[in-house]
Length: 144
Image 1: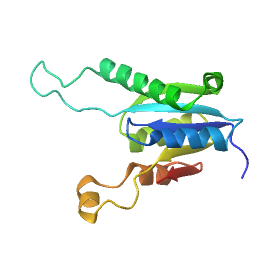
Image 2: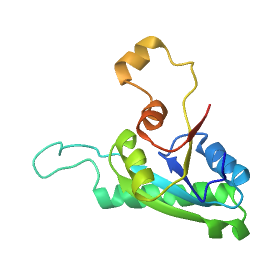
Image 3: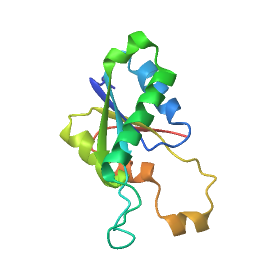
């Protein structure tokens, strides 16, 4: 496998995503790493004139969370090769789309293990990692 020039590490604010960022930085030491904070839409307003949270606030929170994740994993001297971006939308759509449009060579993400019961999978649907693998043209590494 040829070493990638640009690696995408999506973050949804879930536990253990630091492992995906660490893996990407250690495995691809010469690559630019894009830490993509995905902001999932909340949907329609709850009532006339009221919404759960403003989109700008959620985007700012997601970006701040991604920066905190970056600072917890990377030494200050290594942050030059990591860029933090944000994207709004459903992760299974946004991540492959971003990977394609931003000329990403490889995606590294944390996925849920196989301990999820069949009922939960049927109720919640397919995992985001499985969807990203199917929809992304470039290699995807999913850490369990």
